[in-house]
Image (cartoon, rainbow, N blue to C red; front, side, top):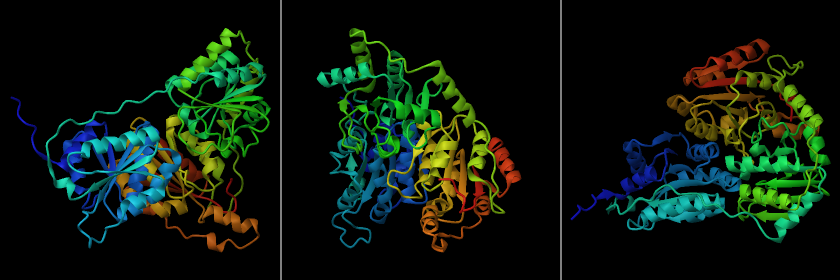
Length: 548
């Protein structure tokens, strides 16, 4: 007769289950309702616990990790104020469709006078996240597995609610869930697919657009085969930037960041085949790129996320399998290629790529400041070609996306789903802690950095993260500065008096530089190339001359 499984405490079993489910990084901040779970996870030795200084940044770090790894992010916080502190981060993940599990402690139900007692289910509901209760010791592991399953399949944050009194219950392990497998849909089929192929057959200037939903090796190869079959140029949304890097007919980003050749091709197309793209206003330029065109949208699932443009046809199915099915139907009907990809187009795209790699001329600025776009491009040239970019929200953000492009979609961490500044630093910590073969670059405004960045410098130093922080320091809240100046009003209310970021970072153990002229900019480029740890660059800018 086999010996019975050893008795352990529930918090120990939860920690062991996380390891068995493939959770190799756990971000968090401890309190009395999650302290012993974290301790058990850390003592296991197979996972890495990254402690943050604010609960919001712990959850944001898990969001950043999810974006660069393609796996469900995991964070843990204690109860009450810890949960209310993460509301913005939860909403950011909910609006962004990012799979996330937050292991959240909760007060014992009979402890009615506990200072941190609130109705946590109601708080979570307001963020758009899902809520899974840990009902008791007998169901705890099944409840945990359900939280991870919901996060993955619904692409949403899930709060796993763990009452503190249950965590010290005795349990015997009876089977710990293994890492979940992805579920793959079948290819789209039927009359709508045939109608879509008919639209492609009559197109003379087709365009293929890929979004974040199409980011996989399988999807990329199948879409490339289809593009070659119909002779269509390729474009991506911002979130899928770099998916077709190296291809001769890659137009790059579709939207406000398009280069002139891409803009001409997109505007002149007569049929857009969109794989895994939501067709947001940013991609379609407020509908200008899709107006009066036939639009075929193919989505990998039927989740109700915002689809702001209504396509001519919307199909649901496995994206690579659907691309292959389209090729098969085209071949069966002997439909000729469009002829839209020409040597002239390839030459124009190559010219755009060369221009994007050249230095920009510096304009005269106020004393003690540098010209932003040329300075950012110079810093970008000092970075390795492969890097992760995390851009906080601010009027500087489009310049950062334009002049610090990434060559792979998983290297772009998008922080602006909810429209709040200050979400970048936490996500940069999560990204940098999740990749070891390339640096992470955070571009952040002085206002956003004051809001949530300074305290996390201690985490950056302690974890020895390969993180380069570029603070766009114009001494103002940029969007508000623009609002005032556009109305010929004094911008005083938008002005802030930030500290000396370089001095603060140096005091906290980081290599830091202040950039106020061209010579200091070159020193910053050298610091990037020769870094041996995290670096902060305080880039001084003129608030009246920031490129939008």
